[in-house]
Image (cartoon, rainbow, N blue to C red; front, side, top):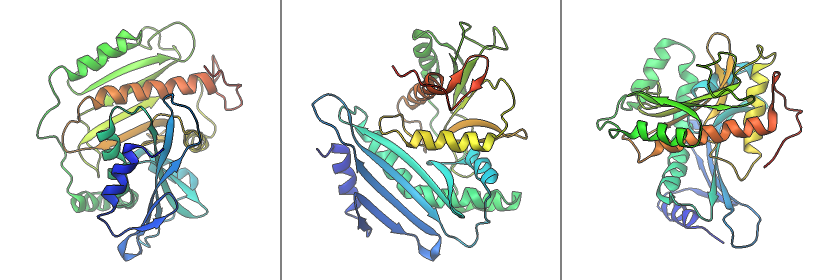
Length: 320
């Protein structure tokens, strides 16, 4: 069964000189900067129930001689600024990957097609600029000017949109609040306390969707983040980011993998961020991103979180 999403992507690709590969398309960028691929990987399954029909996988291989070589720690610091998927290393080659599950009962067909095609077109150009920009302030300014992305929306987000997102979260029993720039919420990982504002030691995952902070290269859009309540400083924060990114990509039935776990701040804290650049507000995307964040937090809670201990990849998962 070929979904409408796959049909529309194929139609859009017919207008471009792309190399056809198994399940998808390949683009060799000019100047030897790298290679982009888009694969619509079929997912086995039977029956008429809603299910995942395919996984759109967008990948970039960075080959530009202008890029410095990244070590494993540097890759996870780079992931703090990732757009359209997570960076990783294949040998010594810098790679990046994003995934979007395509469902048989998908309601937001227009957005899914837009998101997949946007990622395929922009992943490598933006990803290369982000990597180059980490070398110096001058390089950052040069790459920002090169892309010339708008730093703010001409049309502000609709009045009450962030309040509605907050009310949606509160309606499901989550602590949540908002202001004119963001909506945020918390999901308990253990215990009964719903918020760190009540008990600073509460084991809750804190997530936020910001509509005013522009990405330094990609410009205006949405930025969602998810932070965990670290019981103690992680011994291998880069390894945690790499492992979480790998585990997310191992699932076909999962929320979109358009962001990355990366190292943030001077203390190299693992935080998930997802930046979705767009020139104008997109429907109810702030609410969607908030729920994607809550679902990602619940995935961690059910599979890897141990009360009073924190993240444990050896935990026996409780799958519901």
